[in-house]
Image (tube, rainbow, N blue to C red):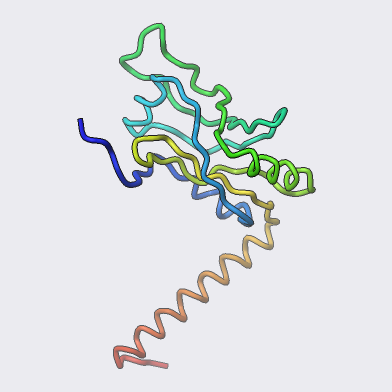
Length: 160
């Protein structure tokens, strides 16, 4: 069997980019059971209510839902168990320092296969208030309108 290469996204947490301001991102491996990997290969997972915590110098992903593998037997896994994230010691120490500050959270942005291994894109994020979310949406819409206008002007179809 040929070795996999490249990046294949399993699931992404689009809501996180709306609810949080992303300060920094990290790539972490995930310690998984065999049936969890098979279920992920089928493209089944949910990052909806998941978050990461630092406990005793180790980082754990909580709330990640990986459904039981349909062909699994007694070896099947628990769907919402806590899963250990694999990071370098320096990165963990940096995360410990940042999460001690008020307002910072560890939020998973996406889960993907990279060269055959399951990885999680973990973000150090700060929560947004409702008015900040509205400002972000307004700013994004204004950027989109400017890009459209620039495109029309470049094609010579400029209208006022």
